[in-house]
Image 1 (tube, rainbow, N blue to C red):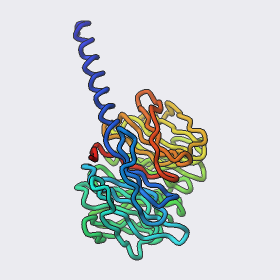
Image 2 (spheres, rainbow, N blue to C red):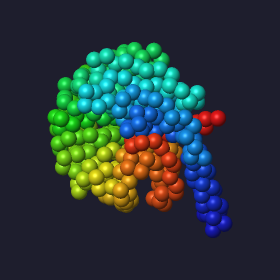
Image 3 (cartoon, rainbow, N blue to C red):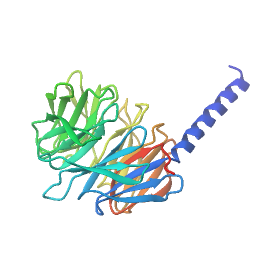
Length: 330
């Protein structure tokens, strides 16, 4: 390749990256405010809160459809526990409905299945994952985990398999969506909360609250590799769309660790002293991180290539779960 052609390729690549970053600096955030029992709908470009909507008591997590039209919040509740989901019409800036889960109390982890008509939701009290049709609030299937404290969940790219971190029993459950059965249980270090799975379903990453470890489950062999340690409280785990990096907020250490997925080496640590880093999400192109700073009542916007905070966006009281969509709400 000639020097001139090489330069042209570099310019095109840089232009494409800058364009991706620009797109990720627009769009909409839906942020769950735990202390206020509300959800904020925020315009990313201006940082303006477009609406502050009521949820059920003690909301914790949120999932959003790929087109950004609908978000669903889990109303986890206080010690007694809650049993509702709040469905938000994002473009309409309103609460569309409240789903009553009946006996399935303490809903927490949530994700849309492919097609975006059904959400998978954990119920700690029932030791199960329930599949809920968002349009009418009906429970279409129950997948028992049989394990205590099924708190967070992760869904494979094809939607065929769900994994739950079972905090009380120190296990990860593998659930078959088609049959509704628990097919395997993996023993992990105690109190596994944070959990994610690679899109191809080959690896499950899980964090141990009590031992400050992050383990990787090889799904094919069933081996559990205690790959990383030295955490205080690995609150969440997020894998970038290109499958190359793993983002792990450490709530008690007040930092975000960035890990190379292939080598499992920590490549950077971003400090957030006194900020309380909790919920985290990415723009679909993987260029921008939106990270809830729960003790500062705002969202840190992070350029993932430079690993710098480029700005902050105000949220409500004790923000945690956060979802991003390219949809711009007018």
